[in-house]
Structures are given as C-alpha cells and as structure tokens.
Image (cartoon, rainbow, N blue to C red; front, side, top):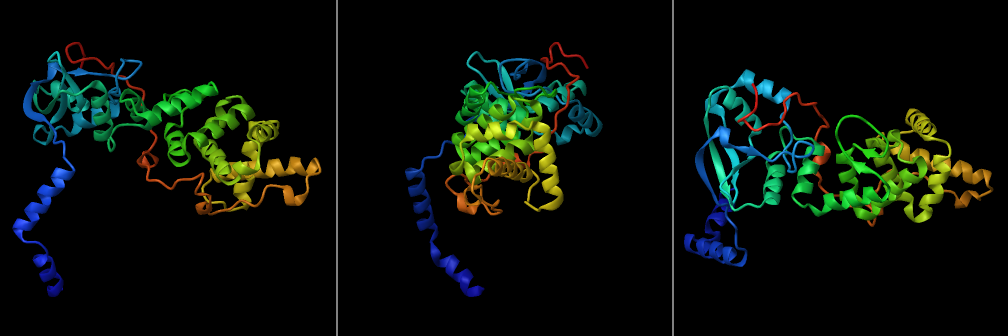
Length: 337
C-alpha cells in the first residue's frame, strides 16, 4: 500500500499537474456558470407555468409539499432560489417555487437567490428539469418542461403519437387516445428509438383503436418486448388485426393466465407473451406448420441488440404520482394564503 501511495505521489509534480490541467482546459473549454448571489424581493418573482396555467415549463404548486414545508419551516434551512433575469429585467423563478410561496406566508419578504442573466426561456426549462429530478416533479411535468426546452426526443414522441391520433398527457382522467404512461413511453423511445415507438403505437391503434385500457404502462412495455423479439417475423398490421379481433379484455385475461403459470420476468412481459400465444393459435387454425409459428419467448434480450439499447434512463425510477392542485398557480402579488 505504501508503494502504491509513493507511485501516486511521484506520478506528477505540482508544476506538471498544473501544466496538464491548463492543456486540458485549452483543449476542452469549460463554460462556467454566470450567476450572482443576491437577495430578491419574493413578491416580484414570476413563474413561467406550463399549460393549462401558462405557456412555459413549471408545474403547479403541490398542496402536499406546501403543507410539509409549512409544518417543518425553518428559515435557516432555506436554500437559495434559482432565478433568471430576462432581458427586460424581470425575474423568473426556475427552482424554489414552494419555498418562495411558504416563505412569503411566513413573512420572508426577501430570500437568497442565484440569479442567472442571459438565459433564453428554453434554457430555463432545461435547467428546471435538471434541478427538479429528485423532489416534486412527475414524468408528465418533466416531459412538459422538455418540450418547452425544445428537447428533440420529446418532440419526436409527440409527433409519432400524433400519427395514430394519440396524445401524450399525464393529467388525471383516463380517456381513449390519451397516453398517460409518459415515463414508459420515453423509456421505449430511449431503448428502441423512433422505429420502436412507431411500431408499438401503430400496433395498439390498429388492434384496439386507441381504447384507454390498451395504453397502460404494462401494455406499452409488453408490446415493445414483443417488438424486440418478433418484429422481423411478423407483419405488424396483420397481427394487430389477429390479436385485436378478440378484444382488449381477452388480451388482459390471457396475460393474467400466463402470469399464473409461467415466469416470464416483469409482469409486462405477460402481455407480449399473450400476443405470441394468440397469434400462434389463430395460425394453427389456418393450417400454418409448426415450424413456421412464432418461436418460444426468449427470456434474455441481450441477443436483440439491433432493436434494444440497454441505456441508463433515470425516469424509470421516478414514482408516478400526481396531485390535483388546490392552489391556483398565481404570482405572489395576487396569491391568497
């Protein structure tokens, strides 16, 4: 261990280390953040709310989070807000909406803030998503912020969904043609790209016509897992007619029966496995030879690298939770306590 430490100590002298660091910075310039630490008047802050309350990126106030902050409030524990000073000198809150709301209630007319200058609204939205990955945001509010920030993947997802008359909307209230499983939709796009999401949504539209029960998290992932294994062996629209002819309830019942008798890993896989069984049964009745039926469900998907990218995707760990806000997202000048 001493020898190893000596090796590390002798690796670079102070002068050599500084020279190497300087060379690295020259080759890879670093854009350092340009912000100032200031005290801001809380009542002057604006919030760029996402639709339907505005045209920006911020989510409404969470009643649960507000109650929690009221209960545990300690002005010494309040971290600085993150603010954008726009070209007209107005101040827009990027991070800390709940803190500024409860702080104002508690009599804090000024709060510490990191004030950025020169940010475009899309840069504010991008920063909002990065700062809010741990507390308070849902996949839906993060997706809205990505759209506001001009994220190309988010735009592609919306466009692909629109091809089949689907809308991405994570608000409460399940209705036909609305995909509320936002995180799972992004998960599919991240792993399979636009081709995979196009295949999955096209299948679901042709099979079930946008019926809301077909658009759940497990159903989306199940169809994607079928796509990964069998897309090169089937015609999507033909099997959609085959599977869809039995109705969505039959699909659910078959998936549940599989779950009771076969271990296929994640429960979503039962929906993909059910598609295989339903297609093979219809094919047998039509006289298709056994060797031409769909093969057994491969548990490992490592061999399907061309259709499945094993990527790190943090939104998979985000717990889906929404709360109907009872706080109208107003600016503090007109907000009521």
